[in-house]
Image 1 (cartoon, rainbow, N blue to C red):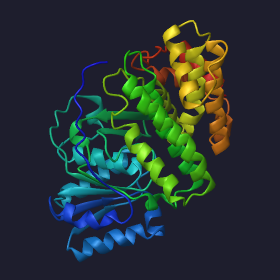
Image 2: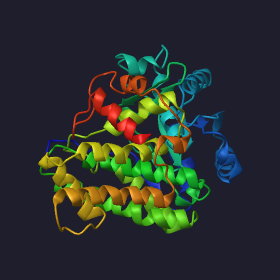
Image 3: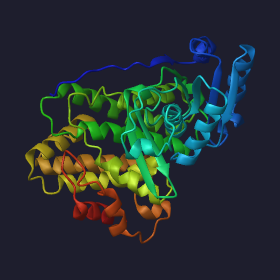
Image 4: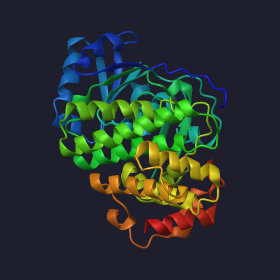
Length: 391
């Protein structure tokens, strides 16, 4: 296990009715806020009205940035920064899922930068502060509500860029599972896949002697599978929504990844793909991850890789520890593929209407900064093989 420092500064209010703490927490930092949200689904629920009622009752001044895109685009970030600077905004309240929260993080950071916010990803900008950020989560998936990461797209240049800084951690997060009741089936499925993908990328690590982290990861994966079936059967099952939401928070708060080299190769592949094809993040992961698993495992000659897949099969999918280890490992991957099919996640590119993609072009984008992956390093030929399996 590697050395690490663990500091999660976000204060979380979890459960029904926790929005009652909103005003008191906002007023600790000011009363001029930017309210950010997506395509307007919060207006179709009662959440938007509830937030606005609280803000008005407490005389909190607010401006709005609506219609933040899935896979948020840099154009929304630029607009948000402009609103903040013109209105002397003191903090940002992001109401939504990972896309809204990621865009809000970039706005919070870009407020203290005079250049274009795209520079933040492409060069050293030495930004040392960000506007305070509050979040009300409406989609369990990315754990953006409690982490220091942001991912922003630039559709004009067909790129998707990530950035991490401790100053991006939200100060305050409301996690009320009832706010996810109206999330459509498709997005619910994509969220579950995303949560599991984050766990996999921390689980599959070359770092040895990390049994504590690995055991937690296995438990979280079991939780996603068990309650994934329940939430798909009943989108308003509170216990299922609550456990999926909690699993999402724990999946990427470094709990399972600290002290380990983490392998984000699948997300690197997804980022390049969704920069070209504007497909739901979780759908891409559902398609790519099983094929990447099969490619990395291959013939089982790498015993460290084989042992990890055997652990996954036996500890998470309850495959009996009988017979050849390679057969057990493959059975585990097959069981995960079955789960993907059972909840209705896409399995191949044609399921998301992508026919005859330019694999060479996509592979070049994926490895633009060199080979990817820690658990097994992937070069261009490897990436092309994985993409071919996805067709």
